[in-house]
Structure formats: structure tokens, C-alpha cells
Amino acid sequence: MASTKERLLEKKAKRLRKLKGLILSGGKGSRLRPFTYTNAKQLVPIANKPVLFYAIEQLVECGVRDIGIVVGETGEQIQAAVGDGSAFDARVEYIHQETPLGIAHAVKVARDYLGESPFVLYLGDNFLLGGIKSFVESFCADDCNCQILLQPVSNPQAFGIAEFVDGRVRRIIEKPAEPPSNLAVIGIYLFDHNVFAAVEQLKPSARGELEITDTIQYLIDKGLNVKAEVLDRYWIDTGKMDDILEANRIILDTLPSSNRGQVDERTRTYDTVILEPGARVVNSVLRGPLIIGAETKVIDSYIGPHTSIDHHCQLKGVRVGGSIILEYTTIEDLHWPIEHSLIGRYVTLRGAQAVGGSYSLTLGDHSQIEMPEG
Image (tube, rainbow, N blue to C red; front, side, top):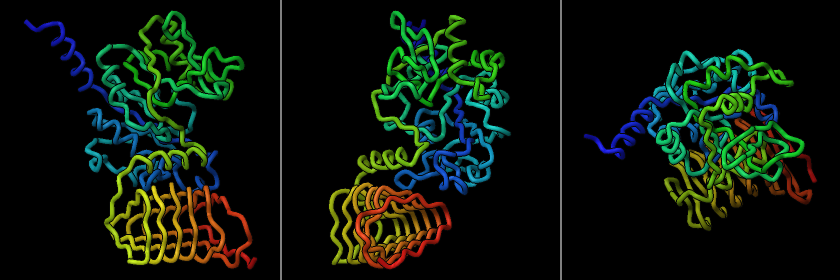
């Protein structure tokens, strides 16, 4: 006869086998315009990898292979980038959401895909350093109906906030004027099939959406087992440029050096530098942590820390630091530094004499800028 421990382990393993992933990749990305006029916000790269890919990889790391991705008007871009999921050792299906009417609405439209399976709901523009494996294992072992992750924040008025009574979550309050705590509900949730009864009875909020906070509150009010865990690792919602650059900084700080490119004898490198295949650096200073993508050329330039340059770019005679530059972009002959910038694909940026100071830029795809003489 199996022991209690063995039965619990088998129960955990059974739930894990049934677990699916649901990633939300709709939304308009209005806080990142003009960058998101032509790009899905979930495909903005962090350390030369789209933020969406981190979510997929973290699900697969937990053993979750069946993943549904809810998409909207940028669905073709998402599908082109992710494909059928085989590159991630996963099976990906796409679920179309006509209009972004809230997180709970996305759960509602994914019901046929999810069936009766428990699932991890992961907002595709969220980033969690260190993954979610321990939280998934806890959810499967405890057999709870819902598990939420909480993060202490300095501005609780801007989030859904958890209120505790006797050590258990009693209420989830959306953007409270007088927060009962500083523990914000972040964009990673775990649910069982009871969530569908909740979303079916929801009414649109004042902003016209079906709110996930109302969904969780319904489960609490019905006496279901809603568990909360406070994060012990770095999390960020990459919905704004500053957040993307901060996530890029954090990731670069964790990566080891790697040189699969070419560096000439006049170039000096400091700290962590990653060169992807075909990258070539001539007569430059590389002060890491930084990453330079495949087939990118850096000539007569200074690339400062916490900078990611994607593939097939050309930088000549420039100073760049704390920035993200996407593929096929050319930046030449700028005699002032680019700092804290997000520069899109196929951008051409050229300049002339120094004008003093430094510049922080947000440039969408295909921008062409010729700087005037100083």
C-alpha cells in the first residue's frame, strides 16, 4: 500500500501532467508608442530575446508543454515569431480575442482550449527573473483552486492589492485610494476549472473590462481555496520603456561572457561582453554587461554597459549606453551619446558635430533621422 507521502507525490504529478499554459499577447501597447505602432509589445527584446519567449521558456521549464496564446490585432506577428512551439519543445495553439476586454475575458474565450485542465495564466509582457517552477510545484502539491503571486510595491494605488485577514487573502481591491497593504497581484496566476464559473458571471467594470481581480474575489467569496505567495525574486511589467530598459539591465547582469564573433586587436573589452555569431568589432571600447547580435558591426565606437544591440546592425563612430537597439538599424557619426533609448528596426540615424549633453530616444521602425550640424 502506498504511503501518504507517495500518494501526495502522485497527486502532484497527476495535476502537473494536466497543467496547461495560457499566455496573453493581445493589447495595443499604447504606453510604448510610437514603438508599438508596428510591433507587438510582447516581442520587444530583452537581452536580444523577445519578452514573450521568456514566458514560454518558463512554462516549459515547469513541464508545461501545451500552451495557448491569446492574440489580437498583432496575432500574425506573434505567430510568425513563435510558430507551432516546436522550437521551445512545446505545442502552441492560438486563440483570437476580437477586442481586448480584460484578462478575465481572455480566460473566457480560451475555455474551449483549456477544457477542465488547471492552467498557468501568464501575461506576455510580464517578466519574472528565476522562473515560476517553485510556484507551479506549490500549486500542484497543495491542490488549491487558485494561486496568486504578490509583489511589494511602492505605489499600491496603481495595482490590484491583496488584503489579508488571519493570514489568508480576504479581498483583492483594484487600485485602492487607501491600500490595506503594499502587496500587488502580479500578472502570473494559477487556476483550476472553478475559474470559469467566476468569469461567466462577471459584469464589465467601469472601464468596460472583465477584471481578473473580480474573478479572484468571486472565488474567495465562494469559499474556495485561494492561496497567495509573496515573490522572492525580481518581477516587472514591461509595458513602459523605462521598465523594458530596467529588465534589460537585470538580465544582462545575470549572463556569462560569450564570444562567437570577431574582435580586433585595437578593441578593449571590460566586464561581461556577449558577441553572437558573425558580430564584428573594430577599434572600439565595449564596457559590459552588453550583448551584440549576429552579423552586427561596431566600428570606432564606445558601447557602454546595459546595452543590447540586435542582429544585422551597424554602429560607427557612436557612443551608446543603457539602451536597446533592434535589428537592421544603422547609427553613424553621432558625436553625442545615446543613453536610455529604445530604437526600433530598420532605423537610420546619422549626425554631425557635437551639440552637448546626451540624448534619450524612442524611435519606431523605419525611422530616418539626419541630425543637423551643431
